[in-house]
Length: 328
Image (cartoon, rainbow, N blue to C red; front, side):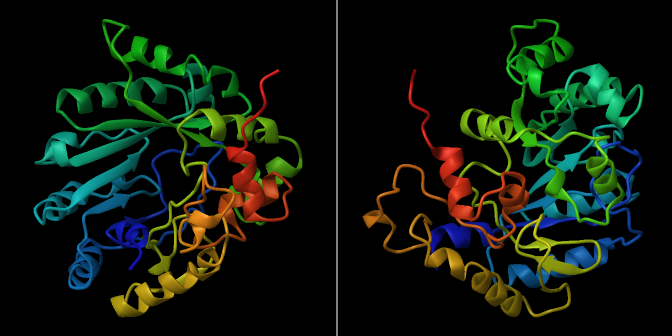
């Protein structure tokens, strides 16, 4: 198996629920009432481990800390020598219930400076999240910040690390936790989502194409400019996808693991024939070798970038993100 694919299979994504304690203005998640139980998740992990050396699990929601027994679930997974990452809004603090913080990474969402963050997530939530991050750092959790860059917060991307340091530390010269820049796009959600109407009516502005490209070229972002962020993703409705953003289901939670892996591999077939993909065995003979694409299980969708940038192919998107602008 291609080493890159094997690595992807060793790290899975699980979204146990879509419900949240906040009602963010820019949320693109459908608020269904589906919830995966701890038993369902642990059963899937147990079956998965019989086929793949599972190294890490990434949890997302909704807000996973709204689940009463979530810390217990995390502890059970950590006891299996599996690293856990948790995407959270940082407003519900159950951190002291997690027994092995050094092996539990927290990816905390922030939308910019306090005024911008609270305008999206509600007054007072920025301070709650900063307090949460401080507590997490004191307990030795690895912490990263997921900065949702919008048309409002774009102007702060250069100064945000310094701003965050001032909020977190008495000595503002202390480096902030690593920041990953998430580019807000109107194509993150389906056309019948309530937020889609707001975008179409001009009530919410996504980033301009040149802003998207600037972030991808010059800042660490998720997904990276070369993509390659595919991994089996378990959603709250029990469906399995090739990545957390793909709209094409590969199967169900109850399907045999080997069947899911086969479908996952099949979804990557287009990339094995692409001249700029690292999955292509002839990539080394390709002229586009400096920044090859790391592949995608749904290149027609490609996290919405094709539509957002009005480009005809995923190859054009990757080339836009990696093309070196000549110096003036």
